[in-house]
Structure formats: C-alpha cells, structure tokens
Length: 420
Image 1: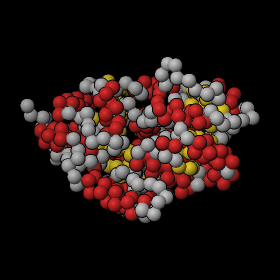
Image 2: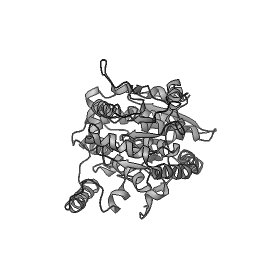
Image 3: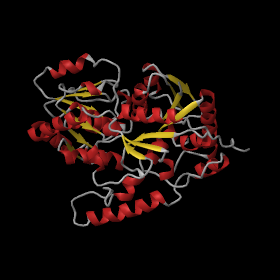
Image 4: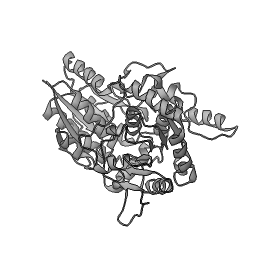
C-alpha cells in the first residue's frame, strides 16, 4: 500500500475534478490524499469520499483573480511572492513526509514543482496538450492572432515565434520560484515551461490532437479525463428535455466571468429554446436573466447525452470533453490559447463552431446556436466523436502509470530543507 498525494488548485473546477477521476481509478491498495489552499471546490473532494487537507496560506480574492489572469496569459503580474512560495513549499514538503507519499500528482499547483523534487518524490501531471513544451515548440501557428485578413497568418506566425522563445528561454517565471527552489536544493525555475513540466506529463487528449507531433521523453498520451459528478440531474433538466423546444446547455466552468455569463444568457434568451445553465456561481443578487434560461448549481454534465441538443461552452478542456463524450455539438468561445486550441480541435472534427468571447453578447452567438441545431452534419460528427470517446479512459491509464511508479520502489532522495 502507498499514499498518492494530489495537489490541485482547488479554485479551478477542472483541476479538482480531473484529480478526483484519477484518484477514483487508483488501485485499491493505495490511499489518495488531497491538499489545497482554497475552498471553492474542495467540497467535491470530500463528497467523493477522499481525505482532504486544507492548507495555508491561501490566496485573497484579489490574489486569486491575479493568479487566474497570469495563468491565462492576460497579465505578467503574479501573486506568487517570495514569502507565499516559501511558505507553501514548506507546507507541501511537510505533508509529503507526514503522509509518506510515494507519488505527487500535480494539478497546476506550481509550488509542487519544487516541493516534490525537494522530497525526491516522482511528480506526475495529467495535463492538456495545449501550451506544453512539445506543443509550443512544434506548432507553427498557435492561433494567437486570429481573423480572416491576409496579414493574419503572418502575424500569427510571428507571434507564435515570439511566444516560443519567451516560453522556453525568457526568465518570465516569478522570481520567487527561482529563489525558493535554490534554497530548497532544487534547480531554479526561471521559465514559464519550468512551472508546467513534471517528471511524467500525462496528456489528457484524443489521438487526433497529437497528429504530426513527436512527444519527447517524459510525455505520453493517456486520453480524456473529465468530471463524473456523483449526483442526480436536477428534475428541471428532464422536464425541459421533454418539451418541444430544443434544450441548450450553457457551461462556463470556473474560469469565465459574470459579464460573459450574462451576455451569453441574454443572447440565448432571444432564441426559441430552453437553456439549462449551471452558472449560479457567477451571478449576483439582482441579476436578471431571460425566462427561458434556467440557472442551476453544478450538475453531472456527463449525463446530458440524449437530453441536450446543443451546448455553449467556454472552451475549458473538461467542459469540452464532457460534451464530446455525451455526443453534444457545441459553440465554443475559448478565453485563452489553451481553450482556443480545445475548441479548434473539435471544429476540425466537425462537432463544434468557434466564436471569440467578445461575440458572446452579439447576434453571432445566436446565429451559431441556430446553425448547430439545424445542421445534421454537426450532429453526425458529434455522434462519431462520442463513439471514439467510448474507447478512452484517461483516468485509468494515469492510474496504471502511477501504480508502476509506486511498484518501481525508487528510494526517496530528500533534498535539504530551505535554509533560513
């Protein structure tokens, strides 16, 4: 028996649910322990029956917003100060020792890159392919400049080249990571990619997303991993599905905004459809939505197949993969490059249309939803993608890799604690 320590960012829904799926798939011989600094989605961990250790220091609301903007590439300012990074690494190293963790599973918690290595524990990272090192190194155009102008392809290629250099070579990681890593006896983390690359990087994608790419050592495909919330569908879903009007799912994950939510809901309100929208966490008291938009808390979206006719999504990988596995064609509005990639991969498969987030409050969104509902080709493509997903189990594949790491029994090489 061994302990596997999961370290997801607990204010990010996709990271929490991805970790839960992998933990569920572990061999019953092993124990899963979770840690996290925020409380937003920590309840999902305990509701799934896992041991959750609430840790400090957490982010203030302002720091959390700053962390999200930094993660999405919308800001170069980071809340990861020297004192915060140092404190978190100390907490994580202590937890690794007290639980005697044999493997650490990262969930985009950047301090895990220091703490696991300082404790000599294998670090595993189930992660989307977009914006990984091989993706950035080998993609000629990352879609940073979009549009139909004649200059857009050249500008996008230039922007991709600039990002590639900055990502892999420029010292853009918050300075705190290099300082704290050095004080913990770990190679300094200076570049963006150094904050995102574990010992084993498990790509949570379909085979066609890797067409034309060569994966370096330390990278392998495991397949999609998305939430299977253990809860019944709200009765309103089946009530709406039984009506004559089409049913549309509005899924915006945890990285969208109140403004985008309201804009999209109002456009959908102008259509002769019903909308099921688990977006309550974005709304404030007094927000007014159209009468055909039915707001709920988070729901088990993997059970919507056969009930929902189309979806409008923000482009997060978990949300996109859930729609794909359920056979639901969708309109995607990627909020940052990784989400744009997720949507574009489905556009190529024929089961999605792509819009820019700024179009959420325009008739373009309503027009796109009409097209998805009316196009039998998109429905057929969604069914074909659904059938392909039925043969995939990224959580089980990840668990097998973790199991092999545990069974390999590598002795732990503990690096010195941070010096004062």
